[in-house]
Image (cartoon, rainbow, N blue to C red):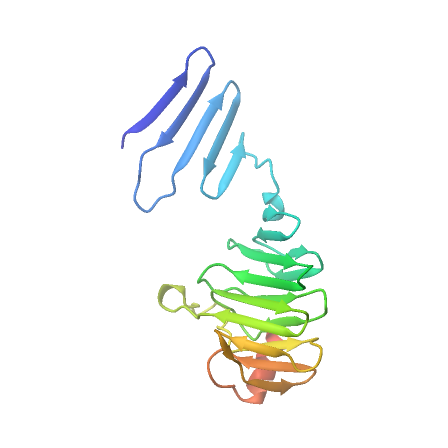
Length: 213
């Protein structure tokens, strides 16, 4: 494989960019004196160390958003999860009272979401690509698609989610699922939304939600 290398005359700086390689991630390195910078699509290091906040698994942090591979919190909204390789995205719109949690990938992740008004959404298992949006602690819009094939959970992975449990809403929430009004099932101090078109038996729901806590 041919490698293109450019050297800046008199600067002692050498930069190298690898050619295209199938099924691999492109990586660029640049050496200046004793310092070496390396970058790829998902990493950046100086002398082997990340100068930003990746040790905290945080990839983006603005006044309204966070994106990262662990717990996210912004403007009173929170995504609780275990650290992993996969990024999630938290958006907040305080003036509009809208808060959004997104799994950006088809891979299945276990997480829960709470907005500052007290509404909490959690699943009874792992969730694939989806978007949970809460407006005014009352209107909840769910976008969800359960991917299969290579993305489906393996034998030792957490089981895929079948329901979402919504608590803390101001009365009975208004919930849409993939653009349609969602059927709600009362459950303890909240409501259940089915992700599969039907609700499991109550004892199964209780066991699975207990496992998901």
